[in-house]
Image (cartoon, one colour):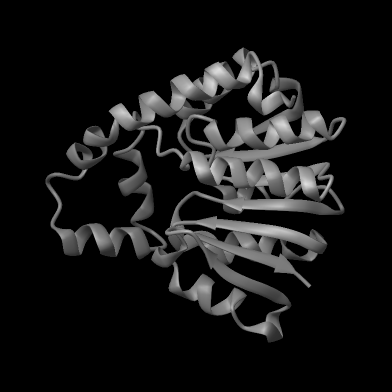
Length: 220
């Protein structure tokens, strides 16, 4: 039995995933006034992402159940104690990783989100799951909020915010990634510069695509 598969986390995640599925239509509606070219450009832009993700302030933008399970398993298998997350949204991925920390005996999960309303919802969800004491929420631009007071050694990094900023966020955290640490980048295809970097062995990673939408990298 694990925190992930028992009360209160298991039924909470079941409900949150169902709500995320139901909200998919709102994701399309939020960008209905944009052309496909504009959407693609904004996804890859290092400036327009603020406008784009502000449109999604009421949408969960959740990881898939399979990716959530992967996050839990990676954190458990590495006995993670220090985790950093870029892009909290409603806290579904945060719940998976905090559950792993709890089952590992404790730790600290630092999560950054620039949309204040999402921080409020994520806090509620982590409190409902009984895991909020393991999580430090940082509101604002991750390029600023993650520059100070990070653990000396980081076991796991999840990149699931503005895709264009993946290289910049990795650069901030990289020196603290311990050998064998995992970096999970969701929807990494929208960040070709990031993929080129982690797939180049000279940069110190072993990296492979995992499933349809995740890049899984290990710090060597």
